[in-house]
Image (cartoon, rainbow, N blue to C red; front, side, top):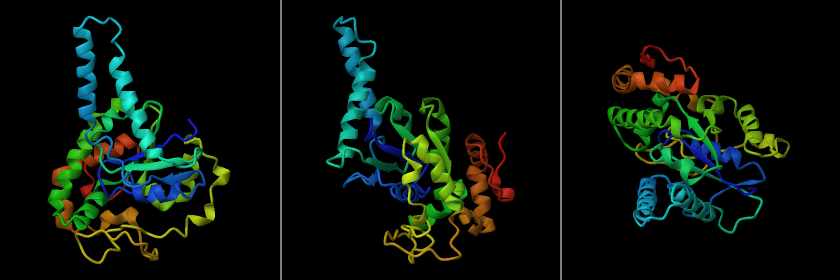
Length: 276
């Protein structure tokens, strides 16, 4: 499908999906979704669609119709096609909408609703996510760490439901080497790397960074120049010793499991967590 969307997802908000969206949308074939679909909330309540499709199949089975074995799959895929039509809107037929989901909950239904569509999983170090979530949403580190821990545990529990061709991206690598990371992604997304404007990457402004926002509890989406000291890949290093201890207590082991799952190792000292 020439105008197939590109779905981005993460474990929890503040994982860098906005930055990856900006990078991909530098490609002339990519664009953001029209309002109100800037963020993809299609999967959040997708269990209701799954329940509906299952109930519909059972109803037809009860009436004695024999050819109902794949009805559930066809109904869910039909819902997915309708949602893709909403995303694409009236955009150019050859354009690709890049849409982002900030949460892993509901991701287990992606392949049933959107069979054959491209999914990109952006994984950021949980400590940096927690540091940013706490500041952005005026939470304590304990509250933010608990949120990330629960979302990450859910993410680990649904691995077998994810599309086998999902593209896994480390946010830390994306932040430190965006050009190489994106250039490796483009062929996998059926996008021509030769059309990508490499010179535009360094000029991208920063949007929505908790570190460049004046007031805690607020997210400033106005464009900001990138300071020379700005290093979102190492955000977790700003955590105090007491905050590190809280994170380790709640989510240290989960962090280690996630890093093993993604195949990355992000050094950070004793608060890294250890998989058992």
